Image (cartoon, rainbow, N blue to C red; front, side, top):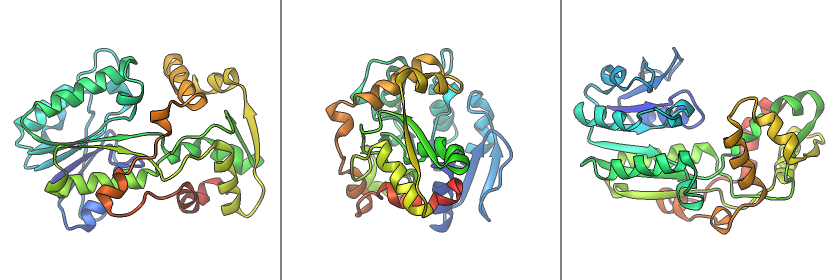
Length: 279
């Protein structure tokens, strides 16, 4: 049995589906009650209370560990989750980390994540570590303005990074959970090309069959909007990356191809699958 945390999110949902379709017994863990694929067991649990994971981990052979935002906060103890997994007999953990642990290693959340990576490596468990860059699904921030005004408003319109489709992250995670060849692998996950916000808006417009105007925000305007849903420090950190990506953040990684035997999906594919959100 394989346990998937964050099972209702844009990585956990396709991962749960892929594992179920592969014939695996799957336990989907989320904080609240959720609809899951047929044959999948659901357990409501809060990862901030690792002991509450015991019912989900009982009998599990592997765990996909995705940390929600509050588990990066001061005082959080995500290391205890790995301890609970080991105590429950889990043999393999696939950890969703971030590319930032190597591209910008000195922020507080990235220092903590790197420490968690190191703890997993030293745990005696089988492991794999996934380090994605920016997500294509962040474009959903624009869904309401596109639906109501046919406008994408974003900063740094002509500065791009190689964002990745979360479905590709899920596919790599499934491979790491199921295939021994990927044990002890550290995989940097990006899309196939650098793409700017303006180009993303054009791809969405193509799928909608109608023009979408791009409105470039100033950094201050963007920060004001972002701090409604995240700490100011994290907003500044994100804007630093979006506005001035370093060479490591611009690099297109070969790791999706290496694991899956195919290239990562371009943003246009993500836009096609998610066009209803913008209509």
